[in-house]
Image (cartoon, rainbow, N blue to C red; front, top):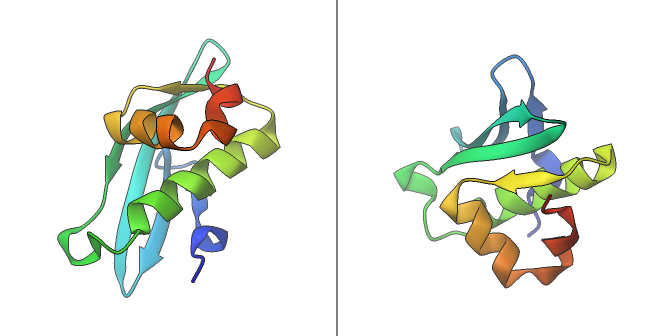
Length: 93
C-alpha cells in the first residue's frame, strides 16, 4: 500500500507530515540559500518498521521535486534514503 499521496507540507510548522492510524511521522525543514534543508525525521514508535519513514521520505522528496527545489539532506535518515534511491540524487544541491 502506498502512503506517500497523503504526505502533506505544513508550512506553518515547517515540516512534512504523514499521519497513519492517528500517529504522525514528520520531516522538519527550513530554507537555506534557496534550497530546502531537511533537518530531522521522526517516526512515532507505533509506526516503526512499517515503511512509514520511507513513504514519508518519498512523498517529501517528490513534493520538493515538483517545486523545482534542491535538497540539503542534513537529516541522516533522509541522506541514507537518497543513497538507497539514486533516482533522488539529482535533488541534492
